[in-house]
Image (cartoon, rainbow, N blue to C red; front, side):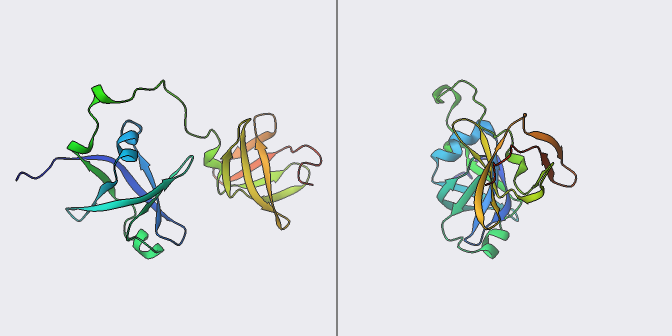
Length: 177
């Protein structure tokens, strides 16, 4: 039997959390294929090793949990590797469910891990996650022992320092109360 042809659809990035999850990036044109398959292949040395997908989640970043990858060390071993599907696992273009181009990426998703600083109050907290709410994107963080959501929009953002990972905002009075 002939060796199947494989197509690189994306890459594993970094281990995420302690339970063996991985952040991955998948080319947009292969996202539907990735989500419809129960198995992917990861290239290790020159071998293409099959992994079954346990679950996939995420808004901006795709977080992938593979079966039998149950701790951070196992996930670290799979970092920065090509993700492949067999050619026969790719949906032919004429059968794809074409949808109008929608912008799935969160506009402010890259701010995760940035320090939020208010012009008046100074340093507030580290942004743990950027969440998509019906009205707008929100920065989720711990502030003075409790979880708070801060709206991310152009009216409140003063500047973004990508080099030092700092977000300067002018927050309305009472927003953090």
